[in-house]
Amino acid sequence: MKIVIAGGTGFIGRALCGALIQGGHQVTVLTRAPDRARNLLAPPVTLVQWDGRAAGAWEQSLEGADALINLAGEPIADARWTAARKQLLRDSRVGTTRVLVEALARGTARPRLLINASGIGYYGPRDATPVTETTAPGSDFLAELCRAWEHEARQAESFGARVVRLRFGMVLEKDGGALKKMLPPFFAFLGGPVSPGDQWVSWIHRRDLIGLIHWCLSSPRITGPVNATAPGAVTMREFCRALGTALGRPSWLPVPEFALRLILGEMANILTTGQRVEPAVALREGYVFQYQALDTALRAILRRTP
Image (cartoon, rainbow, N blue to C red; front, top):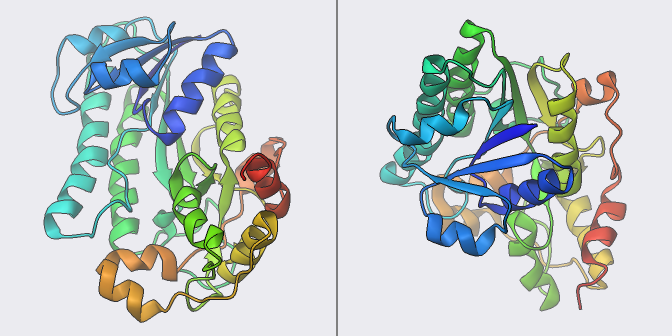
């Protein structure tokens, strides 16, 4: 398949590009920084410059493509959520998706499949009640952001595209994402759960996320929202206990909620609240997870970590 990826240089995109190339696919990455991308992505990935904000010559890369995968978006947890930061998060997701869909609409040989990233933040903070793809959205900032993001992606359905909205959970690998940030305190024997500890963590091994994307590419019946989470959601306390065990380190020092809110402000909600998400569509339609249990996933990720 000929596949175009927006957001192909990030923590997920880099690994996805490598997996698709190994699978024999032709991959083009839309990038704002081609020089940086050349250092991150090896040939035969084709790099096309764009700004993510306006139409341009980059649209030619969509002609004749089989699928567009949109992973573009500024990292959610890299900075405090000021008004300016929130606008950047919106623009890099909602605005960029709008630009992509408008380009698809103008195309004459456009991709018939759009796989668009989203997040389980769509559901808002939840208690222990499991949620699935049919659960109503929440009303906090992340939920509103995900709803607007998905709304723009769904516009491609109006001209016949199959649109898959992948709602990512916490993606686990040691070279990026939340896990990379959690490792140093554990190595220093200072690891522990974020208070209150009973909030739910819905996670997925990066290999399974890439597996789900492959599955969506090859399964024409899959459309609409798909929860990209493993079947084994755990509480924060259980997550940190499993991480400590995998590292041979204790998990004894709780991180106070008030301290997080003092440092991070509203962004602390990512850590202090959660959702118990079930991948109902993936399980019903036959996707087989490589990693269903957290302890198995963490052992696989950390087995070469000193």
